[in-house]
Amino acid sequence: MAPTQIRKAIVHFPRQLTSTILEAIKHNQQIPHNHFRKDWQRRVRTHFDQPGSKKRRRQARIDKAAKVAPRPVDKLRPVVRCPSIKYNRRVRAGRGFSLAELKAAGIPRKLAPTIGISVDPRRQNISEESLAANVERLNEYKGRLILFPRRVGKTKSGDASVDDVKAAKSGENILRHTGTALPITNAVRITEGNVKDYPSEENAYKKLRIAKSDARLVGVREKRSKAKAEEAAASKK
Image (cartoon, rainbow, N blue to C red; front, side):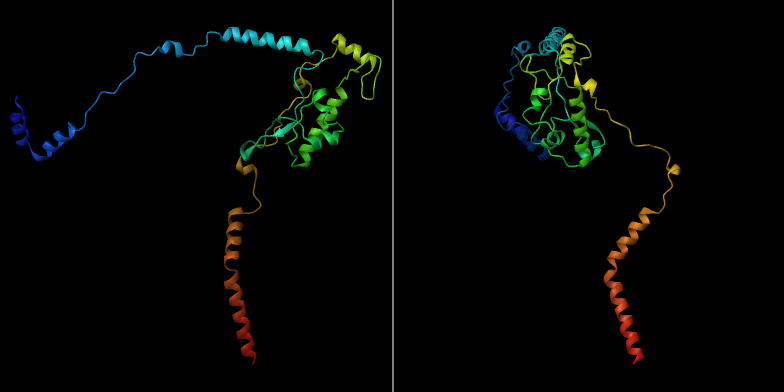
């Protein structure tokens, strides 16, 4: 069909349909360059090595335990509260003991990492309860600690006796993990029950509304009492 015929055909269409056709053929309408021939197989992550990785991790743990023996494979961690109001009731292992806790337990801050105690100098104690709990944890760890002398036959204060050293070398009563000796457990301190089992002594909502009303009407009541006092004084005159 010739261009003149197309123009005539479009002219005979309704006005709304004509504008729609003209808008539809606007711009170049170029087809986007989609790259459908990438080597995507080379970029796919597979996990066929998972069983082998599991075996290597297990063997690495065994080798580390044999290398550091008779020392435990992990360090002693403090008991800390989880952040936020939602999880604050729970406790977990923290990054390290604070300097105040080490000072209260009588452990120098530079000696602590060498005897298996983790240290976090940035941590601060907010409550006395957490300080006392972690100091008790450090003292219990010190009571179980068997510290080898640096030189054979030359013992210093704090070093273990000869019998304890022999028992530790033989592997008797030696723990591989400090978490098994000093576990961190969450004691349940909240008891739940029916509402009728816990009768309330007062209506909290009513008490709050009354307190709010009293605070709002302080000026009005003061003005009213002052006016009554002036009227009583005027009547006496």
